[in-house]
Length: 122
Length: 122
Length: 122
Length: 122
Image (cartoon, rainbow over all chains, first blue to last red):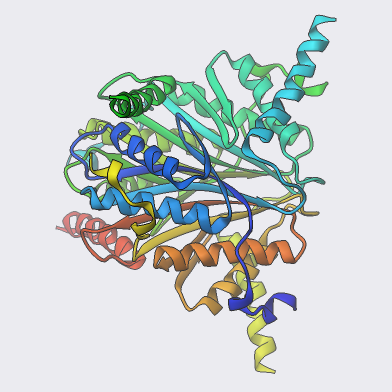
């Protein structure tokens, strides 16, 4: 079986990925997380990676290692700022069939929805 | 202990929530999901709920029951269209301290980031 | 197009699903969540649904409506207990190709792994 | 502001974390994922990290870098095996207040639930 003979140290991580993460600080005095989310945005800006915030998380693109490193640094930064516990939910996708940025994904769907409207108008 | 005496049938579900869901069809002929995501957007439009698509999911607001019902209907609709297996990741939040729409959350963070820029300019 | 004619009110939610949820209280005095997770387990026990706790969440089976209702009731119960904000991550799966309980899923994988061991022994 | 002066290259990733991931292959001929999940278990075994499979994912412990690397390698391995697209949901937690393995988390809750039973018996 192919996988049984996998040499783990020789196995790379994906060269490209899109991750969407929602980071939650626990045990903080208030239920608001906007201060922490703003810190995360500042850190992402410094990373040089392509990213985009929305109301339920932040999407970031790059190599697997770059993306995971910067999310880990977000945890480390907030710990340094005094947050004792952090939980993140990360949705991460990789594909080999094509190169697709996160904006392309929205456009592909919007193109399909636009066709509906054109149809409605006729 | 309070909870031990909870009468389950009398316990409501939250009157308001914000959910962000990412739906994935399994065992489909192609790796593309834009057709299914477009179907989901069409169904959400019919629901009358406030929603917003981004590259890693769709955010929808309403009562817990309304929101969960419509996400379940998305699954049912795609099953009717022939998708045999569907997996969704849902991030759902409820709060009692204030009423906050999903747009307010982004604005709260952007306001903090805007203050950085103003500072940089001085 | 099939979906365009979908009558939303006639569309059911799935009759069966498996959900795994991880509930996080925000703005609580401590970073520990074991008290809240225990409350959730007590509520699930009363629900009569099949469930199983693990270190990263709780898996529960039932109809879509039953499962989502009980998770919503977990939020409501903790709000009643004074938690002002709660965020849950829910992984939910539905399928039409076969009936599969959450224990069956683990067994299917373990059967494959067992075959490895048998091979090693020869 | 502390964070504004953060030197990104000097910022570490957390020394310890617990991650729970659910990996989904897209565009595969069947809706079954047990073959892929078994491959993931074999790879984790080789990694030497502490891990545990359950019906909705696999929990793995280690440093942030170790854990994220091995999950990335799972994606890479499945891509090598011909899966063109993979989506994972990762719940990852870090904390500075105490060292807690994933088994400790379950035990903390079970201890609270056990107290209920003792109370019932009296």
